[in-house]
Image (cartoon, rainbow, N blue to C red; front, side, top):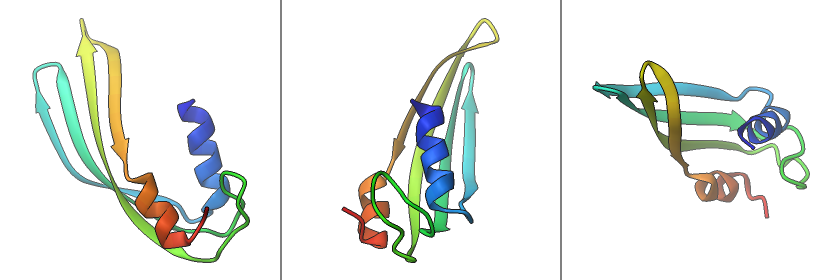
Length: 88
């Protein structure tokens, strides 16, 4: 699912960028705060491009076990993004 969402975002925002605001590591856990931004110049989730820009935040927590990726949890403010670009 993550690959499909990222592909859709890159189609919808040709100038999509992600800034890493902070990273905190504790043992086998890494947490990061990210800021996403871009201009909606392509189709997105069935909506036509609006030409409007957005900035939205994401928090991501990655857990490792025995040196290998165990799981990833993230919360992206999709509602804020869609409101800013005025998509349905």
